[in-house]
Image (cartoon, rainbow, N blue to C red):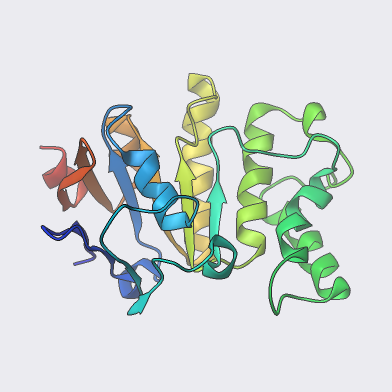
Amino acid sequence: MSRLTLSRTRCLRLIPRSLEKGVFVALLGPSGWGRTTLLNIVAGLAHAGRGRLVFDGEDITRQPAGQRRFGMVFQSYALFRHMTVAQNIGFDLKGMKNGPDRAGIAQRVGDLPGMIELPGLGDRYPAQLSGGQRQRVAMARALAIRPRLLLRDEPFSALDAQVRESQRSEVRALQRKAGVGAIMVTHDRGEAEALADRIAIMDHGRILCIDRPAAAAA
């Protein structure tokens, strides 16, 4: 069983052997209970006061975010308004250590719009896209670096109900196609049950349990 646990010593352990095969973990709980903080710690955007972060047997507690090669999709999508879709997708590739050269970046960026069902939109700007399209661009940017882990913070909160439903299916399909593990923050139990292979129930900064959706949400 894939496990994400917080021990009494507050040593967070990710067991990526299963996550790398495409396991989707949802961090479920109300706002203010530490879900986004935990996600930021995993991403390297924040540091825990104590404990260790272990990924694939490697202690990455103090490893800079840029060296972890974790793809992050923020709640606001964080797209650059002055950049085109193609430029946004390729942005993180330019700063990658041992990343692709210019030709490799162009090829990877050229392949991703088709993968996220945005063919022909590479020259558009974020303001010219719908909310669902912007989310797909943010997803493509995270996938462009070929991440070891995909992190998503409340990815559907800014979408209306109809778009949210269709985006859930698309995001799950993309994550499976990419074959990468994922951790998603959500306060929506139905969303967690629909998308996740495992649900981690959080309570004021602690993970109470992690299990398959039917058992965890019971």
